[in-house]
Length: 122
Image (cartoon, rainbow, N blue to C red; front, side, top):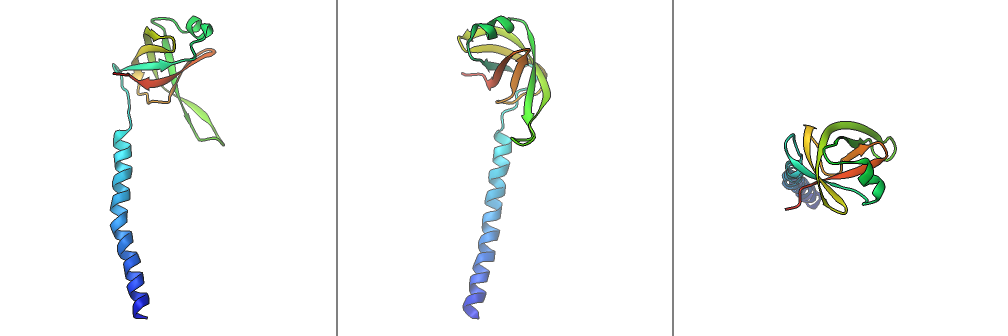
């Protein structure tokens, strides 16, 4: 009985020691999430096909959507807008957030063309 009580005590002690560590890890993840606000510059990754470059032009303001709900119930919600500033290379536009807040992985869509939001490369 004494060994059983000691084992239960050790399990309870380990739970109390590990709980703050996992809570701290979750807090760090939330703090390290990149959110780009109005005025921040972003990169828009695209396929590089001529139809994307034809559809999305310099100075266009493109609506940004975030996919929520997972695989079972996907839903797009509007989270902001970006203005296309320049071409970076064959697969990137440079843009500026002009409305809302966007995150990496959000999608900038204009009609049939779509671009993946990414933070600026330095």
